[in-house]
Length: 359
Ligand SMILES: NC(=O)c1ccc[n+]([C@@H]2O[C@H](COP(=O)([O-])OP(=O)(O)OC[C@H]3O[C@@H](n4cnc5c(N)ncnc54)[C@H](O)[C@@H]3O)[C@@H](O)[C@H]2O)c1
Image (cartoon, rainbow, N blue to C red):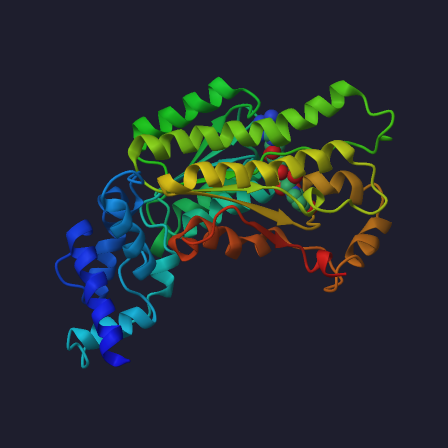
């Protein structure tokens, strides 16, 4: 058993040496850090080489090691293989989550969930996060977060939170913003498409076409245009990337007693859009997933909750945790989906709803 394992490790190491020009796979903090900082496009496994002779090797290599090199059990085995049994090692799990030097575009990030998500990307080490939203000038919350980021030490030190005023419904404008970010930063790694709207109750049989279109234009078309803006830059620079579309539990279930046919339809479309794009972009190393939150108090839901306070209890009672979620409870999942900690996850819908689906 031991020999078989050793051979496969040696083969994997040989593939890695050949493709990533890493001569020795030795787990040391310096190597892990060096590889994390290395331009991601240097690693052949993530290139679009599905038709090349390298593709089999690339596939084999990608199954052997994380982009950071061997981690977890593979790191322990590689260390023993290299005779590094005395060397002090440190955990690599936070390196897998680290977004060191990466660049992100987040729509709907002037406030609410989008702003929370933009901040966690900075805290995870992103170099710059571009927040796209409608107002000509960012609001007070956004400015407060930008000031907070400027005072940040550790992983977020020197990071930039940038604001761009734009409408996600404008495909050309979104593509142009993506290009400008690409020109300026030389890369694009993460996209969070969070801009969305929810309208008042309207009977589905009377639903006005114009209003239906309005919701679809923001929640579905706008998500596509945002993903395109970032995805085109991921392709341009040849680096892999992670596109996260903010859907909703409303894409899979109907919110009890709420006449939200436009919202629910738009979110369902986002779920299928992500699966479809994930299949097209997987061979290019670009992952596409959706995040489906349950009820969380933000300006979007405040339009209901502030006018009808009984909905707090009603919505809270719809999940086994018996409460609404907080925006910060999406930080972990965004950090995970954006990072190398989730490199085998694409075409998936991650539901964070307090268990709303469980009964
Ligand atoms: N809050 C919840 O309970 C909840 C639950 C599930 C899903 N979601 C989804 O999360 C996302 C964020 O919602 P939120 O709760 O933070 O709401 P929010 O209203 O606080 O934030 C939405 C943001 O999108 C922006 N936006 C709207 N139309 C835009 C456009 N055309 N172009 C650019 N920006 C635009 C708004 O200006 C706003 O800043 C939405 O897609 C929403 O559907 C929210």
